[in-house]
Length: 136
Image (cartoon, rainbow, N blue to C red):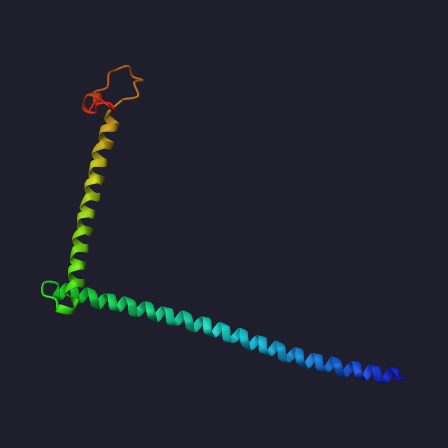
């Protein structure tokens, strides 16, 4: 039979091995965490650089477009034409927005002058201007 001392030594030896393995495991986990953090940081830096490249490409394109839109090189003529068409569409839509805004301002003035709630007992002069639905 083994003595209590032998059991204690064996348990101490096993505990030492477990502690060593735990330290190795913890170090590996810490190393992996550091590596993952470094990869995330580098990935974010790559994304920032890609965005910077994209911005500069766009700036080069804008400069080229402004400089050569009247006489673009053959290999970019289609893209220049599409940009010009899009710019015209944008301007037309902006003008339409301004038209709607100014018309809305005129309507707001009309509403302030009108007492269509009939609480005053007077006939509404705007009824002559705006026929009811179905009377048109």
